[in-house]
Image (tube, rainbow, N blue to C red; front, side):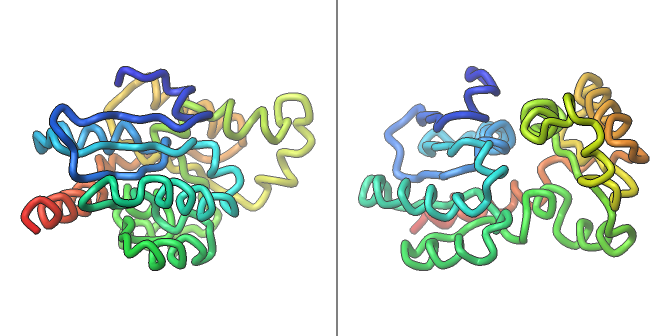
Length: 219
């Protein structure tokens, strides 16, 4: 990936297609790597990607508004648009926006679900409700997304209050990356949680994007 991952965390980022694009994927910056990997695997050269800041996940009540604003801004510029978000804590507000724009999104309630596979994620939740999930992106940015925003580095006494009900941390690994694995282990140790790892790859992200792009391309 050419862009600094911190840019994906903080700002909107554009990845332009090699050819004249007629398809847009509006994605969360936290899954930009995965979306671009799926595009490369399928050899798509006519798909633009626009990523909203990954830090929106810290304020999920703002996601629907941000998506609405971007879809309104880009209206009429593409033949087909797909939103690479799950509900992501919006409580249904995102679906209301997407219905207004006649746009589809990824399946499920959260990125943990579509990356792990929603049935597998439901099973993990049923097995242990007190599970804290970490993806490649969250492992990479644990300090920036969790530790510093919640002041856990300067106020460790907040840890039991915020994470006392969790029992384990599961690293949902999209890649086989030892550095990210060590970061996920360190996050589990910092939070005082048991560590587990599940290799998910791209889960339901890939078939969802393939279905959308194939239908859009042949429409």
